[in-house]
Length: 365
Image (cartoon, rainbow, N blue to C red; front, side, top):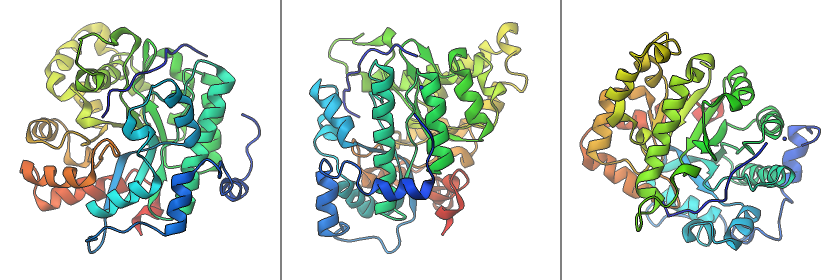
């Protein structure tokens, strides 16, 4: 991914929930004047690859979108990588999917997320991003799903948005960042949100960011190189050793980039679990929890991370992701095969079958 810069996070969430049918009807007019790429795509018809696969089947759980209002806000402060701010469009997503044999991509907002320092403004931006994503789901049937964003660290607003996107829009899950300011997933401050997601048995896709502690630590080394993988590992550690993974066992977590650096730190996680204060939060042990989580292979399609992940967790917990538009589907498909870690049956499970267990029945068609 690109070298994203982020706003500072602080923080503390919209009205009555209309019917899904009414909402989806209204989404067709959402930000119509601003959505130039979508308008162009609609006018030209769905983009086609030069040599389309016989039958696309892959499911990409790590695929980003850029809602026009989101781009307008963050691009003005030079806080977005150019590839997402200027080059993304629904047409380009579908073109990349067609070239790589992807049937469906589950869309999510990437960093810097949707919190912009003001409660009402952040709630508004969150809703606009989520409704834009759902508009793509309805405009391109079967090609897109969505993991809507929440305006964390705003707890009230996040609870209201969960009710809207899961209760009304019937989205596929929720998309969260690994940390918000100086708090990682698993922090007790987020417990009300975790409890609601657990009650709904929600799929929660996570994307790394850069915590307040760790910005610009090494000159000339963008955060994407080291900090993203590290922040994923910090979030996993916090979920484990705070007891959140045990208290909210029905959340189905997806971690990006093969779990960041966690597979290489697993021995340290196991050693820490021997500490009585840590052990009391993990009655079933560290490995029980790590093997329940799901991990996508976005930007981790080389043999070393794949071998580490395969040794650590069951094959059933590994899912396909591309990090589009920062990387392409084709290079992930090729990389998985060139790595030589998985046989054909295992590759099919990673690229489709494992994700089907996380998603609604409509994806099984």
